[in-house]
Length: 594
Image 1 (cartoon, rainbow, N blue to C red):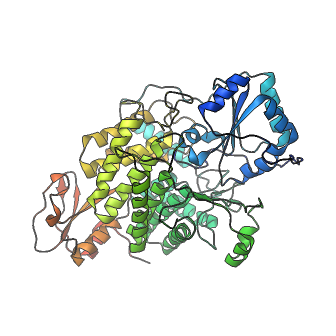
Image 2: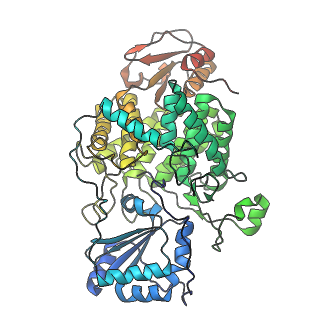
Image 3: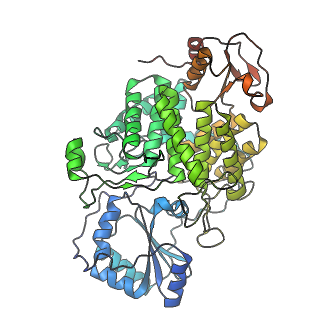
């Protein structure tokens, strides 16, 4: 999973808080970190283990901490029968992947041997928690949630059959809310895969897809903070007018990327303005002094005051009340997301400052999170890991930077990240890729996650044409064979757009534009800038300065001219040379600015 997308209904808005007398001490429950020691203690003391998998930005997690976990009945049951474990899900991608459908907060109770007994989603009021704790003591039989994916035989093909592709597309379209707008009927937010697929269909003349993308982009602007910029996580109640105010990195990054793509495709100034507002928030609130990016900003003030009234205030009014907490961890995964999005924005907007911001963050992560062999740690020190998500996100970021800057060093880092992924996270030729972590070989055994394998397939589909390495294409095939296994998409509803994008990119060569000319030549610079604005995310844009070394992949197929030229290539053939940026923009259907 690429966290934290709210994929299943959380049913949080309908919850009613039950009044509960506060505990005498806020720390009456002795929380400890996730570790083998917690389970060893549970065995010695014949107790259960309760995992509170929270998010530091999560309003209902705070509410549960202030009510449920301060209730004397709950505290008494904990002290007698439970070992209490608390984990910030952003800090542990392996645990977050496993329990993504149950949070946040997610409450999981285990036997001392690690057997999962009960899993609960969202806020639990004090009375409900006390009843749950006692019920497990009375009858510790595990509940069968039927949520363990069967080990279905992997697909032998890496291409969807025509019938299955049609069925998945119908499934995707059926999830669009024609009345309320956007995909999904409960929580409202911009799902990036769905909008990207709609934009891609719109580019080839699908008017309905264009309408759905345009309407979703318009409505999502209701979730953009009008004062500070940045995107609230989602809106509840089936409309776009009841936002949850937390701002988490993946929402910022993917909204920035999608609005930038939409701007490249349609030239709509409103899309560029929205992208600029998100970029401004990243710069002003989630950028560390060294240039790396922070994780999130809470919805609530430190006092626990809900954010609804706060976010109606202007900048001065908010600052007078205080700032919601910013999680100042600098994870490789979140930085990878932000870097890739900033690279897309910089390419479309022609913004050199955004390019510098993306490169600064990448250089910081390389200096402080890199592992031998091309991989990345999650944090400065990891309790577990390495995790697939960090190296994957950074690999995709490096590939985006290579295309933006034409610096082959970034391509080398992307290729090294792919090597690390193959070496550490592959489960076999057809079994996909799993998150990793200290869970490997112990409890809980890591499982492949759908969105992460989609991301691996898309990374490979973009990397293989750039490197020419068969191993990169094979990595994408490994992910796709797992993703296309029979039954794996059952029950996913409209969350199949990522798979449709990945499968299309694997079987369809990217748009390939090659600029041949000196890096200090203004004509070559203008050609390259026009190529970067080509209105598709599935493209390979390269710039070869003959003075710098051999052609990419050794493909010296371009004639020599006394001036810089661009070539549009496909299926082993290239266009006639294009010498003017305007002519290249017309050829690539780059929209004129409006």
